[in-house]
Length: 149
Image (cartoon, rainbow, N blue to C red):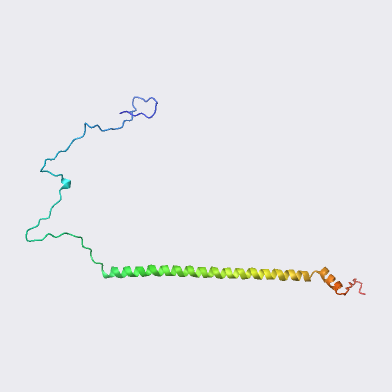
């Protein structure tokens, strides 16, 4: 089968692209006689005598040494302690953020009181309002000129 992907003319030295397709004529069949079995399917059979009982082989787990058990328990305690320290640290951070929010609220209230006091003080320092308050009370202020009289 010949496959060509472009329509350019090729030179004499450039081979055409070919795809291998096996034909049905090239395969071979392996036939086994009735008494033969393929090697992959043959399993060795254990030899059992009549006086022995067949024993099924089950894999036995080796018991853990005491040091491995102790290290496993110690590592679990270390992981648990790390988790507790992390929780305590995040609780402390939350407490600090709460205190900061309370302090910021007090600061804003204090700044509001300061601005009210400054507003009241500026109205008291206003000389025209002082003069009007005196005139309304019946007091007349006379401003002396700088002659010394």
